[in-house]
Length: 167
Image 1 (cartoon, rainbow, N blue to C red):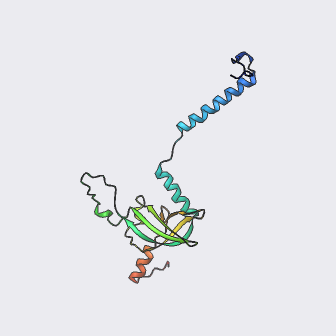
Image 2 (cartoon, rainbow, N blue to C red):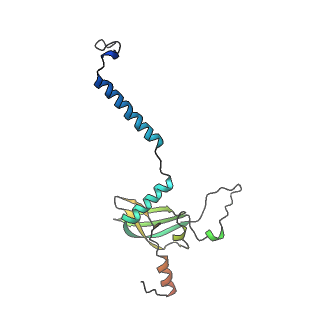
Image 3 (tube, helix red, strand yellow):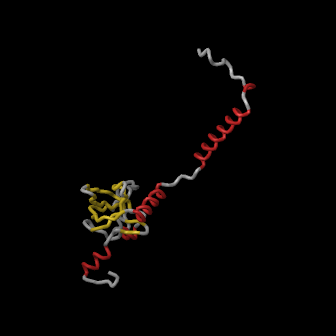
């Protein structure tokens, strides 16, 4: 079929450099495969925590508002009725918020099940600050472990007519 190629491979004609190169290539491929199989993969929760931390530290701020709050939980029951404990009634599972950048309105949702202390007793149309990635404005957050854009405390104090010396 290919007359210019030898019909059989003669191993006795291989040079020391060719054998060394073949062994090095085999070891490199084996090492890459071993690393790929044994490396620790990050869980989705760890990836989301890293995203929130990055945006909380380096994201740009913009004003937005909460347009929806979802209190539902996963339906793991047989009859379709989900029991939410009384202490969790004021804690949303998902925040839906809207903000506008350069004439483009973004409507996003953030899963806040891991941040219950930051999102208690929220209401729709509450003004919030949103942190977003300037390279990808759809990548945004309202709350994180060490930052919150929710202005509930100040809004409640103003509504109640109380003042705080820190303001």
